[in-house]
Length: 385
Image (cartoon, rainbow, N blue to C red; front, side, top):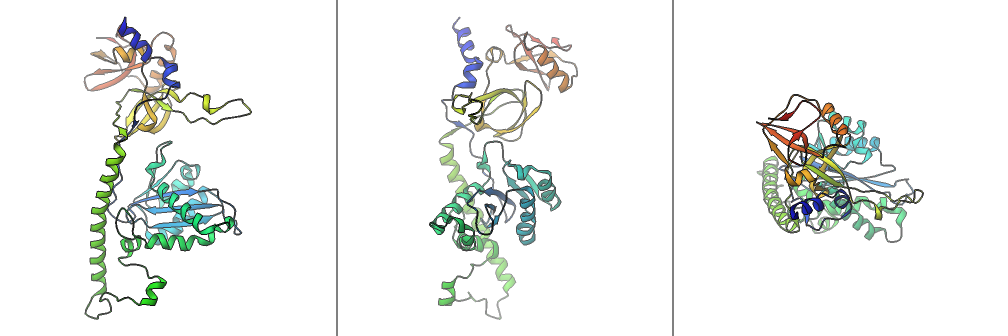
């Protein structure tokens, strides 16, 4: 009796979709580790900001994950056309094609125009998972940019685009916490001259000596800078991961596991709907593919449609009476069945059976139904062996 009560409470669908989790957030840090400049590049829009005299209302920000070099453009609108045009003129034309371009799932970045432009220029476009923008390092740069703009504009909020060159220069010449070097040193092998340098007239470190071969010296400088940066980045990532993981827990799911996903509803006064009273989760969904230790592709159990890719921070297990008693049933004999047939069967039997369970037969894993007794049954010709 006690076991049945525990399973009944654990598998209550209303409780699972409406009550918050009391555990640490799931998902340990998996840092992106670049090895060279412009291997990984992040892109993001900031805004809308107050319209300037030039009509600008947004910032389009690019950042190189390795050198921390930034390219910032003041633009009038946040569209795919603008993003594609600036990627061509500000990144490709100056620095070449990044290996990977990372963006969020905003409409400008998931459009066919932007995807085609990035692909045609030889880069691979990667999207952050839904409701987990921390994957994109540009988010951190955006905060720094907004802080700098706030310091410059004072009460001239419609003149923010006039100060972008000074702000970018300051960020490009300042040593970065992660690498210990300035982005200019990482990218060019030298520091950019400032007005103060012109006054004090620093030495050229022997580069004006005719016996010194500048290309060789530059290559050596860049090689040493990149070697130092890789070591510094590795140490920085380990330090960040240590403190990040203290407040996180490991969470893993298998193919066929049922999960619930955090919902992000918006209040609608006209419909008398408030997000504060809405369910915290939606689901259940079925794990169809494991993309990494923290990212999974899900399928909508109700429709069989692809639900997208989600980070484990937004996922929680979905418990059913069956999953609490007999999640896996071994030895089943299954015939070939298409996904459409499976989900058609699932919808047909929802009133008679329970949620899907994973069935293992040899090296193959199938999705089927489990009843209270743990027997395997489904709408097609599959029976317990």
